Image (cartoon, rainbow, N blue to C red; front, side, top):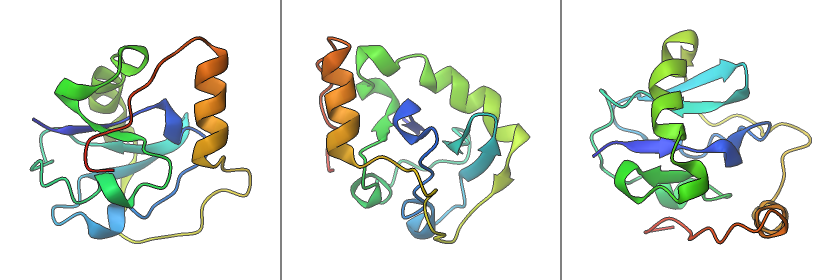
Length: 117
């Protein structure tokens, strides 16, 4: 089962995850500004999950309800991006995990963190 990058990555673009990917399945896209995964290339090695500082990467079958649509979005968006396999600085206004979690709670979401994070 491939992994999926969720909306937590929008406007953050931490790239720690793509630097450990053995198959170069991460793509950098501009609309929205984020990383996504090519689900046909992902080998489900799970190396990326603990590297993501905002826990934005989930196994497809473990996506929290508010982020279920991101499996289809990754598939749709990756062809519009460029492969990225090196760590770069995050965007200047990238949010830390605690801010993202507070925003989710304010929306009434109870988001479980990804396994292996």
